[in-house]
Image (cartoon, rainbow, N blue to C red; front, side, top):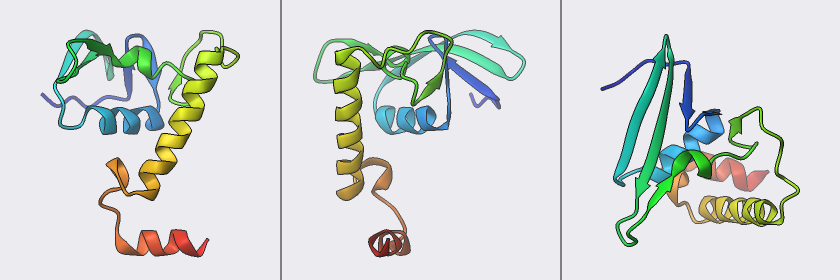
Length: 120
């Protein structure tokens, strides 16, 4: 079922464009549980769980994207937490590595995009 919406709240977190792109890359071709529990106008609130095939556990996608880079929330920033700092560094490294090796959302870029990037 496709729903036109302005705002997507996952586990109470309002994700932005970066969060939506990240979410789409992470859950692509994987089994997820999408549990909508609120629909007010064009706003949908849902809880999303990623079901890992190789590990018997559920990952709460809302908690995974609850970082200021990906979402808008009213909670205090946790950038001072050492775990969050390590996570952000690792995330930045993985993103640049995926971009360099053309993995994930960078896999099917037009040829001229790669050429323009090398010139910069």
